[in-house]
Image (cartoon, rainbow, N blue to C red; front, side, top):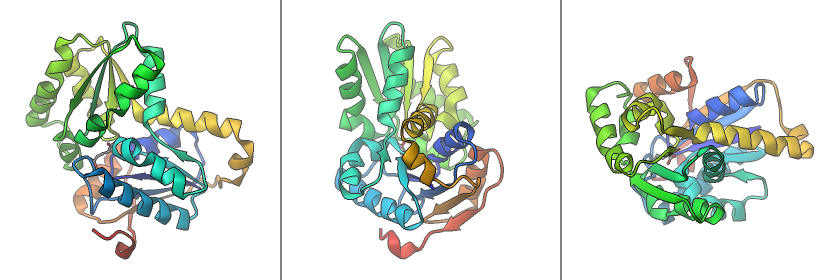
Length: 266
Ligand code: DGL
């Protein structure tokens, strides 16, 4: 089983990518809806939460972990890898690799939560692979609550997106990394506001392709993964709004299951 977690339901964009790219693979998802957002919290707290989330998925049968959250990937990858003896995927590297093969001018914009942008991980990884690149980053803290609330087409959302993207637009970026797994849900409005000529890098798709090629290179692991097409979606708190948004992301209604609250102390 592939275990996938996010701070909330934004990581379902990665689940969708994995379901489309690796059809039939069994999936167990955990969205930490009771403690979302992670992007405004300290690294210490995010690491603690990520270790608990991973433990839950491993106990549920996961043989590999996909951290479908840029914030978690930015600050907690090392800690999770050090604590669990199974493959752990983070979402930043595949997004950077896809960006570098896509960009023409190497003038790159990155948007993400405050914690992801403050970690500096995107600049570090991009410049590590292309020291001549120009990287412009912008934190967009209001976008996650707007997505979780389902405000995808509201004029207020369009206005906020436009304001956040303005500093990147004036730098004439040619490629924009959506450095948060919630943002692909706002891809249309983001693309309209940054300009259709800017290539958008969707980390959920980059991640799914990365997992597929890893499994192709590791048939021993691949053979241990069940492929009965079962997907279970756990969250730490269920509300009708989460149900609605989750179904919208996956493209069909899904059943959200309540994870044992004791495993996720606030
Ligand atoms: N979806 C998460 C990310 O990719 C973060 C949202 C949050 O909890 O702040 O960064």
